[in-house]
Length: 74
Image 1 (tube, rainbow, N blue to C red):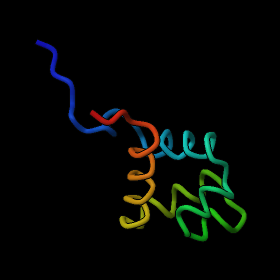
Image 2 (image 1 turned 30 degrees about the vertical axis):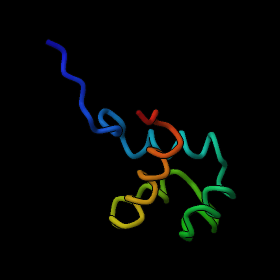
Image 3 (image 1 turned 90 degrees about the vertical axis):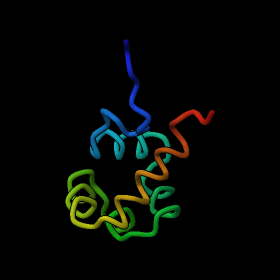
């Protein structure tokens, strides 16, 4: 019996999530929607990952945005 995880982030790394968001929206829009300096001031994947891994509230905002735009709602 195959059981699917109900977690929409199952199997996704933070880096994968961030790359998909940047590819879809770009840094300027991402910085507009989630107002954190690592998206606004000389953004990069590596600096953003460092910040998001240390800052739970910011990571949650990124994950919530990903869920909103990239997962199907039933």
